[in-house]
Image (cartoon, rainbow, N blue to C red):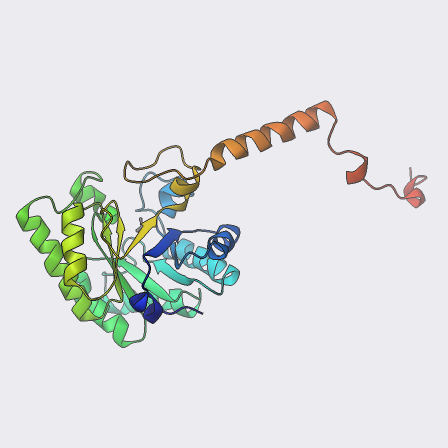
Length: 268
Ligand code: KIV
């Protein structure tokens, strides 16, 4: 079973993908991906919400449990949803602890800011490994006014760098950098000794993460910094269309899909 320590010593670029269910997690593990993130991106990706804000602790815990049951050989990280941490130390610890204790996560990820430095320290102290997340933090969409690139001015870049250092010092085992200039991500990666994992942050992070529905081509929309590596949407369209046609034409179910039992012939 991989641990957060393996991630720190990884020589190759770290690969991380999101997953929200057992079969997808199983396939991701079989492909040799290092980390599965049960992201609150499930809100937009599979739960039909427009943002990640409505995602609940219960939803992340239930899907983390499904991913954990399906995998042995991949690090499972549960994403802490909006307001599941930060309201009080007690409820933050309870919610993060639940991901590890009940759902089987190996670590939690917190969308980070000045308010998560002490909390990161406390969680790590209690034995809950923490992945920090800086740059674009989608749970702040109402403050940010959208999903634009972050850290594009000297002051904003400095603030991200300072927070990155503070979270490393607080004991975070890695840091996600989302939608920041590639040169800022490269600089932070150089500065920190914990691995950085980028999304829309250029090629110089220690690893990369993408949302699974973007990678496989299941979603209707994906961000410009993502790449579609497959076209599962058209596979599903064609399979569902073929099923409909086969039922309507009487082709399905065929003889090999049906069984008759003589004894029940004269029941009516
Ligand atoms: O929720 C998520 O999937 C994430 C990644 C995009 C890093 O936070």
